[in-house]
Image 1: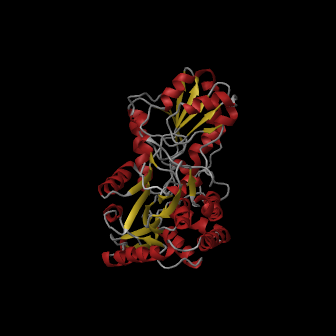
Image 2: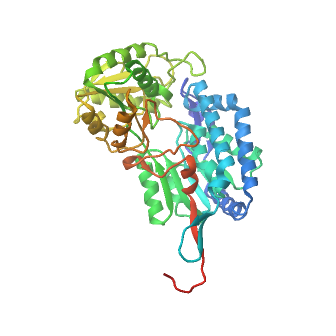
Image 3: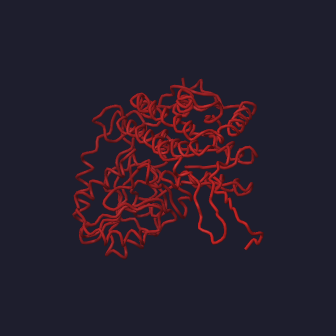
Amino acid sequence: MENTIKESSVKTVNPFTNKTTKQFDIMDDAVLDTKIQNADDAFKLWKKSAFSDRKNLLKKVANIMRERKVELGALVTLEMGKLHKDAIAEVEISANIFDYYADNGEKFLADQPLETPIGSAFLSYEPLGVLLSVQPWNFPFYQITRSAAPNVMAGNTILMKHASNVPQCAEEMENIFKEAGAPKGVYQNLFIPGKKASELVADKRIKAVTLTGSEPAGSAIAAEAGKYIKKSTLELGGSDAFIVLDDANIQEAATAAVIGRMWNSGQVCTSPKRIIVEEAIADTFLEKVKEEFKKIKAGDPMDPETTLAPLSSEKAVENVIKQVEKAAKEGATIVLGGKRIDREGAFMEPTLLTNITPDNSAYNEEIFGPVFMFYRVKNEEEAIQLANATDFGLGGSVFSGNEKRAQNVARQIVTGMVYINHLTGISPELPFGGTKGSGYGREQSPAGIYEFVNPKLIRTTTTSNPY
């Protein structure tokens, strides 16, 4: 079947078997133009729709997702290899986010009175128009949801350019919106290459763009948005620090670090990619990590007993192995793993790296796979310095038995999110986003609905004096 795949297509390649199961043709310019026009036409009506109508739509989307979570989860597993139990959880959190904005959107977007000494004033939050959303494959439904839920509730319309290796998930999300009763053009999926997505930013009918993905992709999108003076948000890579202070519960921290790093086979922007441990407990911590590694079981992602799924593709495995091999040549120690697993599918051994110095490529790169990078530091100050020694700034964790101490450390880490005694998590009411090379803007929480609305000032006064 591989030999029959067209070059001008997006396709599902099951990473558990490396077999192609389905393909879709790339949309031609005529089809694409029609979809953009549909989105623009829909916006003219959707922006005037009642909040109750928007709420009902999002509620129906959430209900459909919950009713079909096992089926939708299996589709995620098929296309990018995620453990089925984790894929089901992803669908559930996505449904929760749709519910969150359905329940709170009207309140968030209510007129905001402003104090002024003369007359009265308020902010009116008004939708911008057609939003181009460019999303990655590692959380196929969750990534869609983070931009779709708040913006549909705000009155914008969505053109979704999803990753090319999850086309069935992309198509299914549009089907769910249709089943929920979305008016034509409110939410549409685009089968187009990434380069085409950047070109679309120039279209006057598209008013803003959001992207989650790599730094090069984010840079390209941001450059186009800046060129045409359009609002953009970016959520890019991460090299999150996981700091373990000497007063932490060592077993809890070690277990959390391994689970967090191996979650989704290490293909998570907020995965704890740099585990930084104070010298006093470093040896004990490392031994407990090795014990946790022994519990990892690679296998069929549909099997509930499996704890390590394949990576998303053969290319992904090859790239991660090259990074590990390069790090070893530059002086890092491969304590465990480092190779692909000798079996069918895109599997890599869970890998433990130590002795990573500042001149090592792994010190600065994001490794998007099951690679646990261990650092030992003399003290808390050195831990903070190492945590900040990166161009990224997405998430992070601090483990300590003293909450005030942990919070003090967290305040000194230059990043978008820090969790105390917990992995960087997901919850509808908590903002998600980063700083530095990890991008800008926020999704989820009240902040997520304000990114693509115009906070228009409306003022009433009895004087003609403008001051």
